[in-house]
Length: 371
Image (cartoon, rainbow, N blue to C red):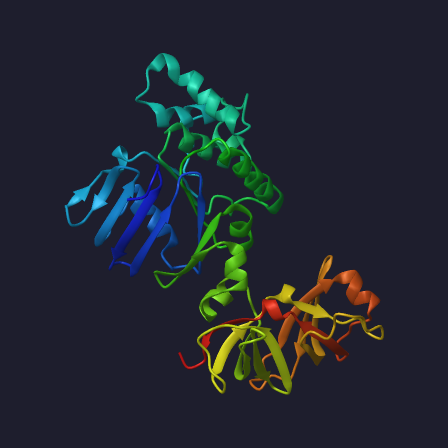
């Protein structure tokens, strides 16, 4: 059991999908579940809400037991204080915004219900819009109604299933900001399902990376980006620079380790558990790569310098992404990005020679290449 009013989940599902996960979310914490489609993210939310029954396990919120297979305990959905927001809003189309929220507090005294419902609409910036039906509202407004209805249940846990994916980017960012503001008044665990790792990074205290029904790693976005446990996690959080190299040297006194990568010798901070001659898999995020200034070398570019040829250039507004052919034994390219004005000032073009530095403290060994 966890302290306070947090939620503890340890469940196994055999059919229709294979799922076996265990995690905890404290009150005032938002955890995001990310991973490819079909990995079981939405199914986890449905099991917590009681809409699906797992094969085995347990679910508890604070001192409450919602599910325990050993005790044959299963609390019905209507008796679980859960607020759930769906991607499709799931509003009653024939009811107004106010009436949709009223449905969540039907057990309250009638004299108090309208005032309470209007309060929740005001809380999500919908004051004065209670009479509008869903078809008279924008996507962002409909999603706010769904959030107001979920909060009106005074839930012990708030579940958000791809809540912002059905709206445009500008509205999505606005709703994300509103969720951040809303969190300051909530003392309940929040679980967010999203395919967008950037959204998870902006909103979540921790991120659980799911793959084929299993949590591969659960950590802050910063730790996932700098220290993924394996190549699956690295790829799922957007790291493209994944390579294999041989451990060429270990200096216990200097607390450093060297990797032989093609003709380059890369130095990185010491890590225990590796031996000279061992082949390891390592990665480096794009922001761990520094592009040298062409024709104007500067100090600080001696840290793990490598050289290559620009293969591809993609400009995305103020950012330019580069694909660079380097001396990798497996012929994998190196990917990095620079501000577009830097690319233009340095006359970076396809076929151009380019120098790079790999920041030593950003190189991360994930394990033996044979494991």
